[in-house]
Length: 508
Image 1 (spheres, rainbow, N blue to C red):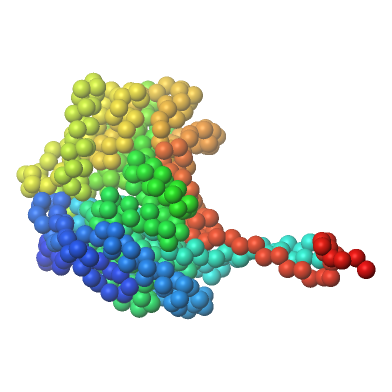
Image 2: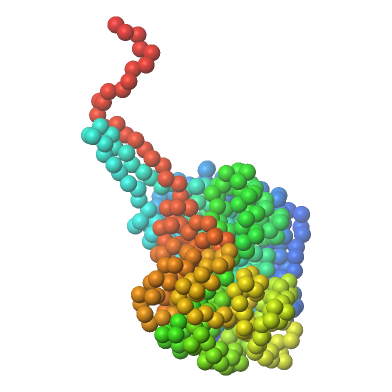
């Protein structure tokens, strides 16, 4: 993959951006009613640009364009090789534009540029991966029956799919959904998070540059209560894939039921990281710190609950305190920054309220120190909540910021019970040098994804998703192309002159 070099001049020059329009039927256009909203820089608290605010009429237009492209346009009947050429072309254009994408992502979200470079680099592979998957893996089954019938299955695209994406790691997560949707032959209406529109708009420009037929891909910016709700309610949208907060996911499922839509929900998490006394403590420490304090703590799979065995707790906490003090907080555009500002004021106030609550619940709060140049942004310093117990609200509710709750345990049975005593079940992490224990605990923890002696590393071939309040369904690999973005069709073919029962035929 091409490597890009960033200069201070390149990065510091990106503090504002052009205003953003909707992308419908191959054209960039204002919202139907002309309304816009401000997009705020989380580091400077200044306006980056204005964004067209789509509503029901704009969703109607986008869905109509997507349906026309699927039913009457070339996309629905396009040969597989030709469609895959478009998918791979999108990946090529992403590679060409990756430097600007990384900068826009950092500007818009407050994520450090050193982290957005790595995240956005994965986006092109999302398209290439699903191009390969569809070409090599999307095939059906065939069953001959007694020499009289042949039964076989084919997997067909659904039609128009609605994708609703979050503001944390927006570009990577948008491509994570758009790539399999397009590769399997669907057309798309994307409603990105209103707090991070820059790279969603850039994705529209990438796809426009790749030359996809009109209407195949559409973006309606706007708010969940208007644009998002209208997308979910539209009868011509066959399925909705959502990544975001659990309460919103529940509302989407309820509203989608009126039109019997398929839904895929990747929701919140409060993932445990369990460190036993026989673990490689230094590696576990690296993983624990990275897993909650990278991405500004705004990661659904973050290890926000850390369970420490009593025998190692004191030393581990002392090391955590040293790490927290050494984390570099600052301008997201500075290549040395490790922790940037949270996405916006409302989220900042939510996270800050939980830290205040932790003090009220009896926790010792340990925080890093904010530099002087970070006073205007939405910064929460890396925070440890010590002396916590699993019944506290700060241990049960998703905070979604750079806040680690630390809880002591003594036995394997106890920590499994504590890890599972929560409504969420997205991810979990186990650290032990006893591999039998690692397997036992990983299989006992109620979560969709577990890592043993590893941080959150991803493989596009495996399923991604959670249990309980953390989601319904799985994304990734063949789970996306077989279970969500396509529908199996069974075809029965007679291959003999077998007997057919005769009803109503006059007897001779």
